[in-house]
Length: 578
Image (tube, rainbow, N blue to C red; front, side):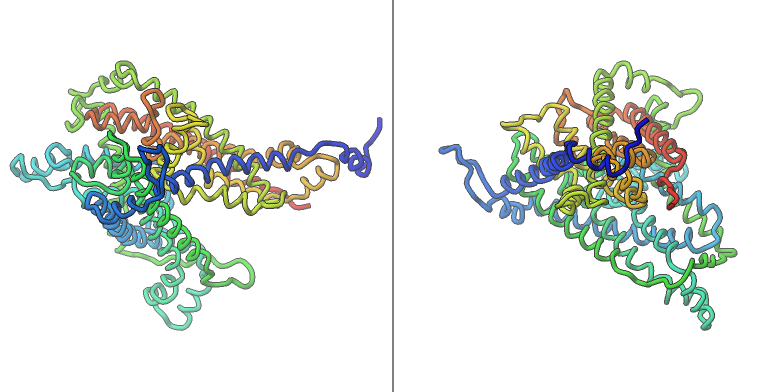
């Protein structure tokens, strides 16, 4: 038996072709197509107009003049700002005290509260809007019916009206405050207890320590959370489309969507999309700057666990507050969807006497578009998850290991789509792929491109962090023995990170089946997906079928999330340094 020495293996490696550079160049080209192409078409269409006489596009700023002077655009812009500011303020008012209660007090069931708030991320905001429509429609809403039953109020009187600006702000806040909660709670968890202990030793009481030490240290995370809440409220499409349009007003996202109704006005849609893109980039940059600041530096060993504040008799009102808040995005909407799925009329309370399976039969048997939407959704979900994971894996490896020249550019391109709102990306892709040389509109390919582009930043960041946690010594040994970087990635590194890779795949799959903003701009009758089908059913008033599809989506999503969290070693492969 002949044993190849490292020197002999290295000598043989000189004659082996290394495809690393051309492969990574190909991946860079794919990223450019995903990111640069749609943004370029957006900019081009926003500053040009077609000349019917010469069939040539000429430069103009008339679209922007219309955008900022025509009340048909100014009013949606002002409404969007109002909604975003109000939602972010309400998120701060609700999430900050909740984060403090969970992270710094002895309130019961704190871990359960964290899990429930995290679970609210699973609910698509457009589905939550439908649920609140069932609950708080002025005439037929379940809560308004209960109000009239208890008080004896007349039929035309109501307590809640979800079809209003305040109703839209309320629903958006319900599904946005978890972003602020997570940032605040995590920041409070990371604050060293030593500083609070020092404050107490110097004579400060519990509340003075919280006011002078804890809150200032958590303030950057709170400010970053407010920016994220503002951004989420600004770029949402589903909730405004379901609640604002019946109320007779637009936000910028619904106005952009309306510009593609007959007759289409793609130039105005492109011009209206650019301000959203610019503001998104500015907010994300501001958030990065705020979170990047170091408010304190820890010297020495491991910090002591924070001393929890004893609430005493305040524990009961604290728990009441927390349960009431959690019921708004979770308990009440889920009850409304379950009730509508098994009730003959969505706004009639289901009982054993009137419970029915007709909505399930209608959704999966009689409704012809359900099977097509399900097939398209699962095909796109699996394809997007696979392609997105491969892209994120290779680009994450190249940037984490600095494998090629220009790895910083690859990292920038992989994270850039996070600054492109879904509705804006949909407009850019529509403009990119409705004309030669590559006509993809009307096929599943354009939706696949949209989904991969939207989910790539999060997938890339997850896998790049996983690469940084893996000791590169095994990879170095593989390279010494003659393997190329791609062979090393496939045979050594990727198997070590199989848990992270699988978790990333599941994350993209779940996010894909919930996506509406880009899909609503790109679907056709043959490429309809479940989220778009739910939106279409809303326009026809089929709340029972919507509830069945929504609950099915939630069950699948929770099953995937629970399965991922139960995987052995989830959260990263642990390697022992030798």
